[in-house]
Length: 287
Image 1: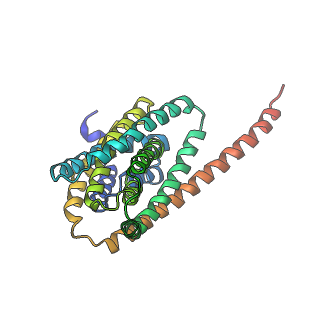
Image 2: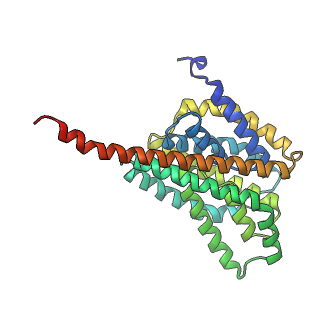
Image 3: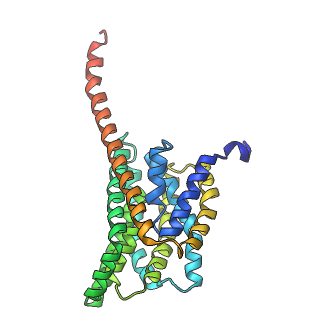
């Protein structure tokens, strides 16, 4: 099988668009790519999550490298987040491996979790500036030890959410960091969140690969578009007005969340009908 046979232009275009939006807005690829794969391309939720985790990690490596060179990463925050997120991700992956062979129940949980996190991300995108202003006015949390504890807790929540749905490290993570570190410059919080997302997504992504939930051909097609896309989006980010981008992105996330809820509800109804019909078909068989 040669490269031309495995290349899919639609997947590459999807990767390009998501890459541009990630570069423009700073919101993680999981919020955008996973619902796109599930709703538009019909990819199974488990495969979409696993493939998207590696997609997001590789796409964000370039972003974290740029932030590292610009000294806009607070490595202390990254270490605190990782202290909670890495163990939480490993535990979640272990749970998925243990309970992963339960039919459609696991995919239903992923769909509902993804929809809920997308809705929360949409709210976080819309309210980011207001939350930032409130955090600055309120001042830093006291005593300082509480900041460390809550940062580790935040990391654990992000690690669990990312491992299940691939969503959580982008707008939600940055918004929570704004509340914990109101005196830190926004660019350092964004850089720290991106730097933390790379190892977390790699660990969770390779965990899903081990579980058989990664499509390498799909991943390659997405990266063909996303790598140049995130570079272009990063260059355009300083010129794009937030008053246009943030409501647009929040609207896309909210619609995706609603569609995923509808999909999960429809599949749940279909499963119930199938279960209800099974006894009748068994009773009708000749003995």
